[in-house]
Length: 318
Image 1 (tube, rainbow, N blue to C red):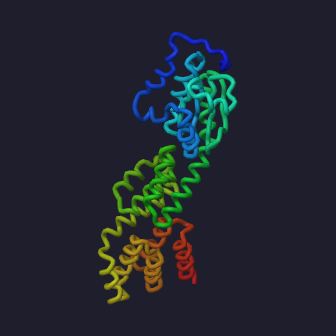
Image 2 (tube, rainbow, N blue to C red):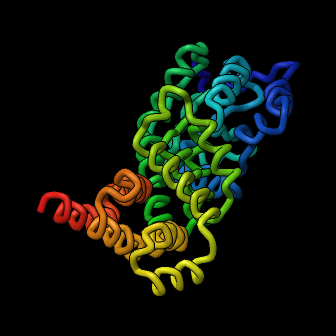
């Protein structure tokens, strides 16, 4: 039962709630549970809730049900593994915020998302109900945030800003470590910067059941191409070889791989298309297969993929 704020029966163990709050275990767990004040409320709750849901526990030292709820609430928040944060406010020391929110009894827990209170409950609920509340809040609010972050990350990577993309993918993974799209995107970001081993390690985190996911396949194709590019030799030398002998299909093939590694996708397509035009069966359809791998790595909506597919189709079905 919630306790009316007006009823302030002090107990001998009045500071138990504060002590429980300070005994949090490891540093990672404590990072999701903290105190706030009137002065820090905007930063701790309003601004932070624009990144992920934040629960605010309004409590007081004299409140028995607050002491019952505190360990249950903290346990459930820590079990959410970073999907939600818990901020605690002592209403006796900091009465203005709960007053503005119209809080009449405690414990009162408000969920904030995107800078606004979106849900809440009163009283010392059992663990199962607290867990269900957190699941509801994170499911309703976090999914949209993840989608926005992933979209921004994909756009940054498409524009060649691998560092920003990696940071955004990492933010998604901090909230959902098993997000396959974010793992694949982070791997592609590593590939773009030449961090091949980190890309491999990231792809290794993808669950077995998800390894044929389109995003994972694209990341794996990008990784394969990056490793392939290491073996083809300097770009300038390959350009000289092709200029000296336009019929040297191997040199042109290697040039396409090297051009792709430099982000020169249209030129890479040009050279492989040239091989297909001159000799469709070269190395068992090797040029066409390489184009398909390019398309997989670049993604179906990339301009180079769209144009390349059109050009390849016009040759194969002419």
